[in-house]
Image (cartoon, rainbow, N blue to C red):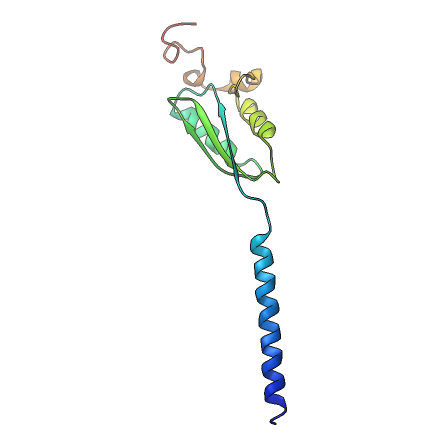
Length: 127
């Protein structure tokens, strides 16, 4: 019986150290989140809700926040899952300009009138 107690203790110590090492490896795995900002043509709170919802479904996106007054969309994403180019394309497919690249025409045409950049309410009457 005295022989089994030290063996059991050694076995428990060995198993717990392997479990700790496995947990450390899983914590260290995966790249950090990066942020990407782009200028959009979004003009109202409906635009904000639409863009933030669409970006939430994009693979790798952790968070998306649109600042309506500045029209800047800030996206936190995992670079191993997506890229700034893919994020920019997602914004364009939603119907909004992304930096200097125009929105997809069909998507823009489907936007409500209040969300269109040519609406007189948002453009101070300038076409």
